[in-house]
Length: 152
Length: 107
Image 1 (cartoon, rainbow over the protein chains, first blue to last red):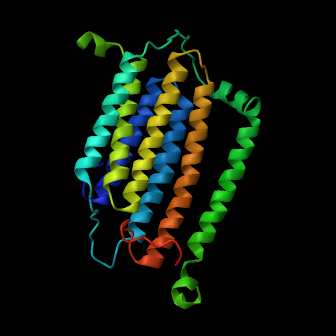
Image 2: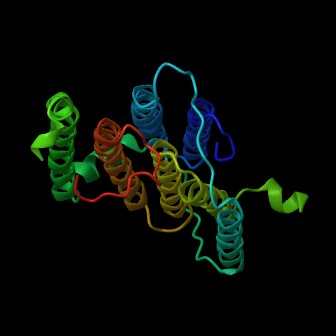
Image 3: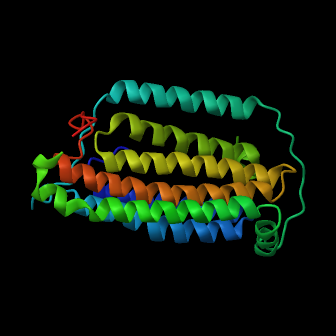
């Protein structure tokens, strides 16, 4: 995804990596999180990104290129970060406890969501509402600003 | 090495998430298209999420880790919606989504 010059190729590569992450969640016995990942990321965010790509390409040229700058410092930095993180992760003596394999997590997650996590749940709902209202406001105010750009 | 790879444990998932994090960091640092930078941010959020859920599986954190992962997904969805709206506004204003050309704070 990172090394492609074509944005559409990158978006489809991102889709496959998101599906791969969802399969990792399945391997970790997190079935509800995997389903949510598929629904929200692959079904929602990726479609949003593809719409963004389509709405922001210049003119009618099918030129989905992206410019890459600072390639050498960026790769050096990211490789250093990856090496450091992997070193730390391998060297640390994690406190692993053998938890019994849960059958399904949906019931427990639902009980926790309505019990201990009721306040973050409501706050997240309000956050989503505010985000959607803000996104609609910002995206629909487009045309008056282009028609009279000298008012600001 | 083969024996180490045969039984995936906590470390393997952490390494995958570290690789995802560094790839997302590289996308954020080296791309000059706003949408590519957004995709890098999504990769970074996903790597954090893998960490949370791996810890909730392999330590006695329990289902709390999965709950935090759920909230990370919710916040990522809100962030993507707002960011795409901002990108549309920027494209409308500057006729470009190159990050080097967007250098004005006030119209």
